Image (cartoon, rainbow, N blue to C red; front, side, top):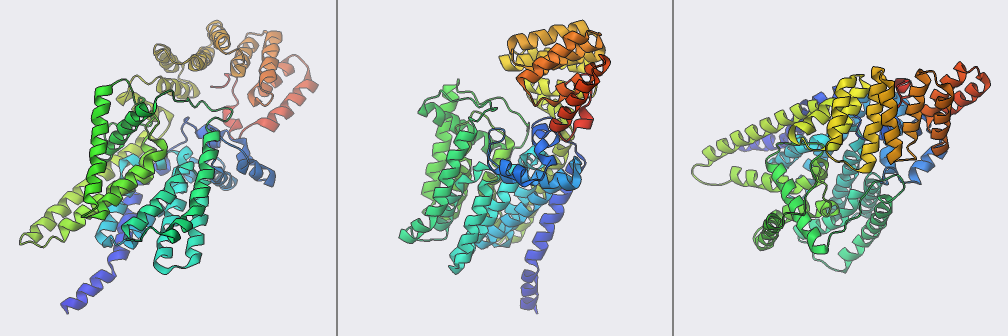
Length: 559
């Protein structure tokens, strides 16, 4: 009877584990479904993306044939286009999609760890840590980071298919793995690391590195190289603001070591999380050498351990390889740990499983202790994740959280000020723009701040102050069409129609697709009695207006 119960218990292990993953993940991420769009990339990707309104073949060809915001991720854009056809600009729909993708990713990780012999307990620990870790909130809560959860779905699916190919030698699994890898690359270029991860699976599962293994990886390596080249050109495409690094090779190594230590520490102690962090500084050589020593020690330790336990080496290398594309960057972000964290969680899962199955006299006490620790960690992480989704509720809560932890980031003041401006809280907006100006931001940012502060003054009815700020904006950036259009608004309200019309025409000369200038031009032409020209301008406005045009029809101009 005892043996029969044991078998029946094992029979239900996997369904129970899947149920736990689903319930814990859904409850932890529930607040995301009530969140709004934020003003960090969401306007460009969704709310102001005119491409979404027209699901024509021509539009789809444009999506697949061009770069967007310094990236090439057509499947991500296609997912937004499909959602818009059914839900338009209902943020709950987009948040629901991100949550569903994250849940599927958590289940796929459970599946992967089972397939590499992790056992049910190890697989459950890895999947739950992945599912509820606070670092992963950004990838799910941020609608514009759809590319993260989408590329990971195909990335993990490709891993599953490859493992089935290893077990069965069935070519259909190999082809499916390659196809899913392609889909992953079309969702986000971070997927280029997959071929190295597949080699890592070969190492873990004792496949001898021979001609066959090398040949089967060639298609993966070639397509990864192709998309690596595409990503290189995408980051320098028109409209991007990427900075070229002037650091030496050794300085880049130091930066990479600091980045690794940053992510490693946040995985174990997820506090002071932020959607923006201060840039990693290369101006602290002694500390950089400490970080580099720590990383080298970790890697050397992994190599030594590989003689005794390949699984630990696998976890360390998985973490390191998955981060390779972003290691030289001085920018750190929570989203970059989405896939890489699996390696560290795998080691944690192994530790729990090893302790749980340790055959000693006090094994029952050890099991009870481990269970308490695990429940405590899951509870803490779930709570932190649940609370962090409230940070992403809207633009003001998001940027206020950044400034609470890192009060010297100018862009946070600029974007929070813009959010206050959109809410017509003009004094609070002006206060944030003043704070940003005191931080010596870039010339481009200063012109944007003056333009936004000018809009806030116009909202208060202080039009001379507003015009003064608009003048400062395009003095710094003579081709700043937004400032011209906004100054035109101020002139229009003051009854200076000729000056207003001149500014709107100047804005359209710089940017013929600037829809708000067309709308503002309609108003002034109507008041001047030039109705035929007003109709022509209105037709142009309809041609160029983005999805959220009705929400942005305002005489106070554009942010």
